[in-house]
Length: 250
Image (cartoon, rainbow, N blue to C red; front, top):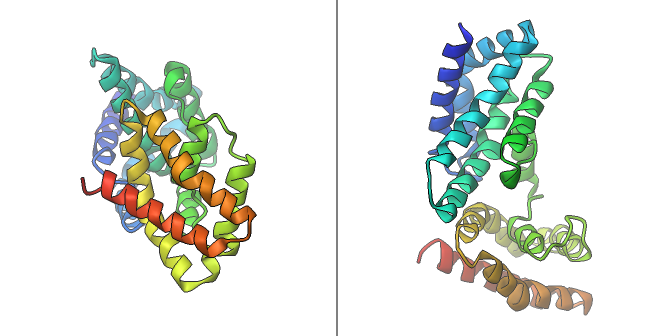
């Protein structure tokens, strides 16, 4: 297949993945369906990339260039940023992980180059590398901390900050040790990705995240420090209920 034809097929595939919701209960189903449906295309892409560096560069730059042009069509900066968020979510949730399933020894170099080109063309909308096994494993183990991570990022706190470490330890060592706690965590990971996506689209996202910090996460940390773990669980559960009502069903 010619490179231009491959690029056209890639754009079609990308547009399809844009309609999928990133949700724990359906993620593997969607990905397995995509892998089966586009197995032939993935083989063609792998073959082209393995044959020449120029072909790999053309393939890797296809979707970053496509998204860049799509965003430039939107004159409103606010709407453009909202669309960019959707594209970023799609890239790290579906497209890059799917490209990582190519039958090629150079697959990491190919997906790494996709991310590199994206970040060069759109430095204000950078993405990180992701893979299918990592996301799938994360869902199964419950290692994601979507809302708390988003809040801490909005407050310029690093991923290994004291607060995130404490909340993750509390989740792993206390919540997941009880049946009721497991239920809270399970429900949280079902709804959290959508909640973060919807909050981040708001003009006052920073203020919303600060409110979550002040009203829920900061009190939770104090309760953990004081050894009042059951009270923290109640507060945590209250936060989930509030966010669910506000951003899923309002």
